Image (cartoon, rainbow, N blue to C red):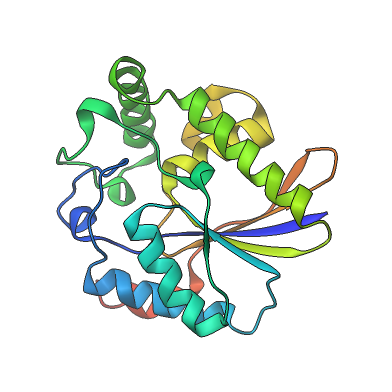
Length: 209
């Protein structure tokens, strides 16, 4: 089996403005850089056999900060790229971290409808993300792998790995910037969640919002 630790990229200038990224990009904010450094400090005591990242700038910036600390060079992997949100990209009022569960579910349904018309459908995102992590598992059997990715990629990936039901997507939304999710991937393609939304290493920032 393969153990995969997923890290969400750090907070960006757009996130602080409540704007939606998708395949559009913005640099890490000062807070985001600090989140990446705290993530690196939490990971440095662990051994990883490989390190992958989304090819988008905010993920690669996060990966570069972590890579310098853990001593690994991140490899860009297209399957980890964020969803294309189409007409919604760059829009405001998308601060998911502050959503209530009900608001998050309603927002997810609305976004899903718009993306079906103008962006990359969730099923396609989930399919390519699952293909990417299963390829990682194939290349790294019985190893530990680190990967930097995005919230919508992770939520769709887990939806199809764990549930196979698009309606389950909302339960995996709300991943804080810089937080960890760890999954176990078996050779038969099945997966198990070890931890979800681990942000204990960011508690000093929570005390200084």
